[in-house]
Image 1 (cartoon, rainbow, N blue to C red):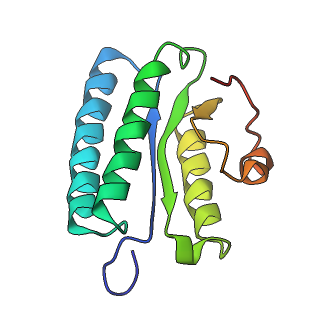
Image 2: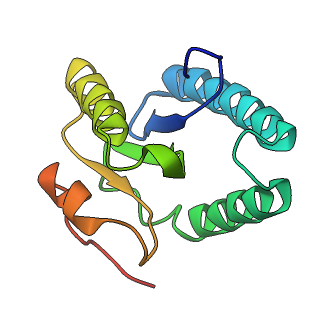
Length: 135
């Protein structure tokens, strides 16, 4: 968030290999986060509402397709967005660094994310991500 409390970037991650209690706790947090994101989306914080909602829905569909693929991983980057005007200025790096620290603090050794062909693969490779599967 900037000095005007406007959302400029987000990274949501989750623990995939958790016990039932932790899984429920994180699922509730995920729902809360999704509602907050939807609220910001509907307010227009991510640009054109129709386009942002379409992207969110596409993300959710891809996420459903991949639910069986995530089993070998400890963690998932569920959503990673940086406002277009701030890309290349280090904000994404700060968000990813915080996520990596979260993984270390929670003894998570592997993570995955879904992305599209328009992403900056070099960015993810710097953090040790490798192409696992394409569809």
